[in-house]
Length: 422
Ligand SMILES: NC(=O)c1ccc[n+]([C@@H]2O[C@H](COP(=O)([O-])OP(=O)(O)OC[C@H]3O[C@@H](n4cnc5c(N)ncnc54)[C@H](O)[C@@H]3O)[C@@H](O)[C@H]2O)c1
Image: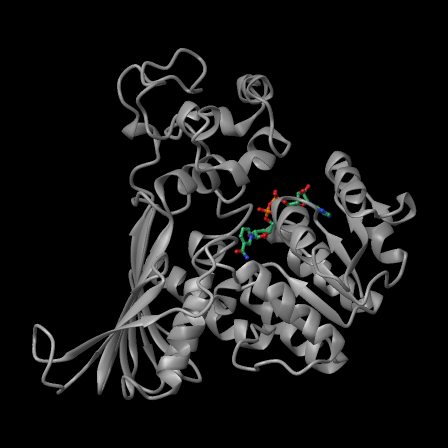
């Protein structure tokens, strides 16, 4: 099976290229990236001939269909334009990075076109493909907590991930990428929508701001770039020292973005981050960022299920917490654990009169979005091959439309301070 990759960055080359090329029956047949170094390095890594290594999307699409499937892993604002071109070029199986588009009308148009033209588009909401969230869904489907009534979900982005991606990096500006709910928390809306077992969300309200990562929060003596003699270089948790230069950085995967290459040497990191043109060398309080660093959303679904979501930059780790409350019990979990707690009402055991049971997670993989990256790639290959797949899992573009829609209205609610009816 041949798969082409458009956008050979952290996701395209490292995650999807890596996972797909490890599968025995898959060959990466073409790569395209406007960054020549990235395109060439991915082509060499995956054994793609020079004739199928492109630096321009038009040239790539003019070459016709060069794969049984196409992965689109460019930046957020490229997705809509490129998926339209991919459908026109004749691709029938597409794995599209999230978000589909920053405009609701464009998401609707893609859903319609995909249906009319018989194109399968899987959106990379990778968490559905993890052992942890598949187990949550199975417990709900099995009726173990009765009818779902309420969901309380928390996305803890992690202070270091927020500093890298949403203050200094690619997703800092809602005008060039998307509001953080769409750029990051779309995974969580996909999960909430899945667990709510509803056809649609009907009402939404939201509050949140960019409160911390801005100029007026910079401490006295703070430099605009960490390596320009900042008084807090050694101690600030967000400094480039802690996030990129120290050996024990949590941001190994972010080096391609921050320094321009995977596994850079200490000197390469220093030289790159000293360069005044490198946005990742900036102090987190002196960036051109505008996305909220904490936000909450309250939702009501058409089956009366209510849900709340909290997104916050202010956590030590990058993880999610979920609490699903049903008529017969409740399910509580933290997605870096390999178990869920299932409390069943009315059983004469446990500290508060109920039965508390630990449910082990099947395949609790800890790498690549808890195993969701590999899981999605496997399902994408099944879809290309026409093999049977669990339809429950499929994050097709029409399913994504419903969860993206909640986000568009939540942003409107946050900006206007008014509850929105969908
Ligand atoms: N599913 C997930 O869990 C997940 C996680 C992180 C990022 N993402 C999404 O994946 C996408 C890529 O993110 P990333 O972290 O790989 O970013 P990245 O910056 O590492 O990679 C993006 C690549 O696209 C290339 N590119 C830009 N314009 C292009 C064009 N016109 N044609 C071809 N290539 C082009 C860039 O040069 C870059 O190499 C984003 O939309 C992001 O929101 C998804």
